[in-house]
Length: 109
Image (cartoon, rainbow, N blue to C red; front, side):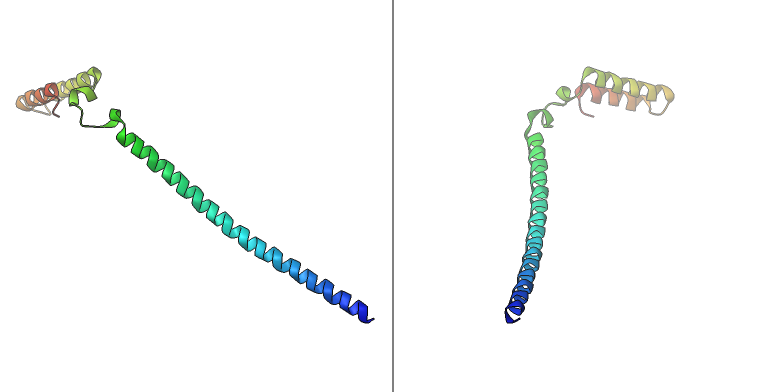
């Protein structure tokens, strides 16, 4: 009978050890999942910042070019058409009309 009591005690201790290790493993995996999520967010932010920097350094998107190179002929024609229609409707005066056309031709608007 004495041997059976020791076997039961060992089995109970073994069960507690298993339960303790499972709990520790879950806590450890929870921290690694949180770290992984944090790393993924950081990586995504780094990628977005990298893309923004790439666009900022791209020559096509810099605004220090002459204004004539930025707008196409269609853009100029549309602006002139809008100014003419505003003048015909009486929204702007003749002086403003000529001033706006001059600005559009120079590229300073």
